[in-house]
Image 1 (tube, rainbow, N blue to C red):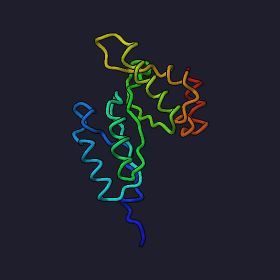
Image 2: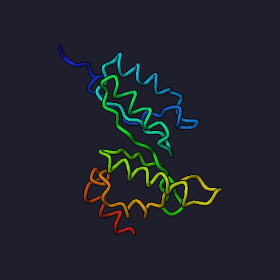
Image 3: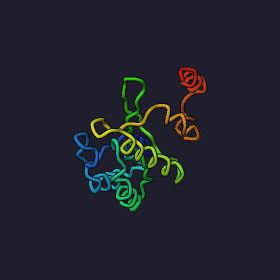
Length: 145
């Protein structure tokens, strides 16, 4: 039987109840949705935190869906701040995302939103997500700095 397009589609930016003011989906609901629709993989990408990562990974994997752990982190470039979604490809990637998430809260003053300076991202040049950028784009970014 051919697979439906829903089964082949990977949702990469799911915001759960842990994304304050952005998501209202409960992880139990995601678990049920994944089970009933036979979803192969699903990514959690809450903004500025990984609070739901463990619960998500445990519950989603129980129904045969591959959990993908991620987060959106604010990156500051000059006077501009923008969101960048990060996804862990393995345990090492997960540890690096945890480190950047922690830096975003701990190395800023109390009045600013949690963010990481773009230079900090470049310090983590081993990140797998940088491999997704084309070589030319990465070189352009490095020339700016």
